[in-house]
Length: 426
Image (cartoon, rainbow, N blue to C red; front, side, top):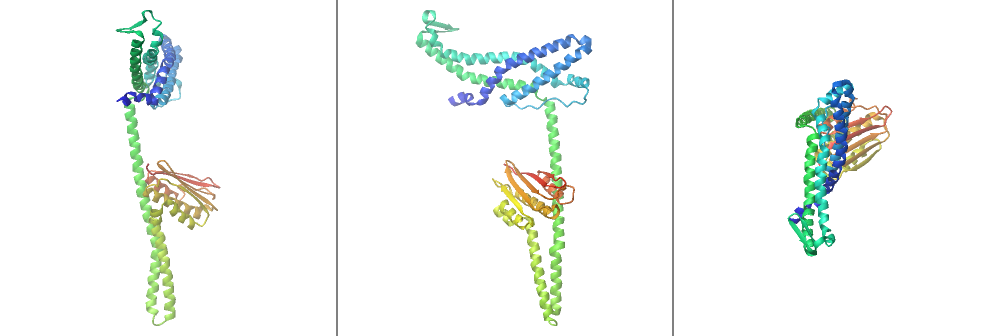
């Protein structure tokens, strides 16, 4: 119970609230004087409308500047982060913009805030001063009670007499006020935050429209990601089909033909049959090697057992150009992200080998919060693009299918850098 009562003392937001309350009166006085002056001058000059226009413009601009500063102050001291409630201007003409300002409800709410801030600041500062200074005044009451006539003092319905009575009463009152002061500060800060949200933040209708817009954008992005994932899976299926057709299948056909010829020549030409068996053995070993490479492309066992570092070390070792590998992934990302990172690096290094004419490459992978960041660079000729037909488009589809982001920087003449960010959870 005691800890609950004293909890505001341990919260830094309580003291930020005190600072915010003290500043309210000073900022409110300046904004009130400025805005009320411009408002009065503008209203008095409306009969001479062209003359009033500069003052009306100054009124809205001043209120907007004060509103922006107040949103920043609320973010810094109250932890209330509000976007600008104003719609973008539709014209560059200042007169058209003035008309748009005058029709905007959010602009008038800012003017209302500027006018209300001073009286709110007076009330808030009066309450804060009473509860905080009153508690400390009661603590030192016994020190000056002896100087009062009759050695007693009256406080409304209460009368304190003598040092013992003053000490007991002052300590009791001081403790009560010291407990109440932070709670009063929290209550006033909460009320001030509600006023800031109501007058300086977006209207509920605007927030609803923005939320609908965000949901539509999220749905569009999700649909694009699903489409990219489907396209990537289809491209992967075609690649596997092509690799089987052009590689292992051709070798197995040759193996079957060689074995058929062996069967025919086994009795008539043993030497020729022995040569065909040797050829068939070589074809069988080559087919097995190609099948192993193809299976490794699905999901290498070393990736599952020992992670990205070991799996990519094997990829780098097979690369014909020197590759510097730097991996820092702690904690280990999910298996789907690891698999995607493995294929991205493997495909990117294949592109480097085939197209870049590079003499060296570098692969950096790091875990940064909820992102796995992959950077693949080389010192080749550059000029690579996502639409260049070099496999980068397939990488981009794979990345987008996982909700990630990919950027290719490859000026003519090089160097080339492929930067990928994959979401991998917390």
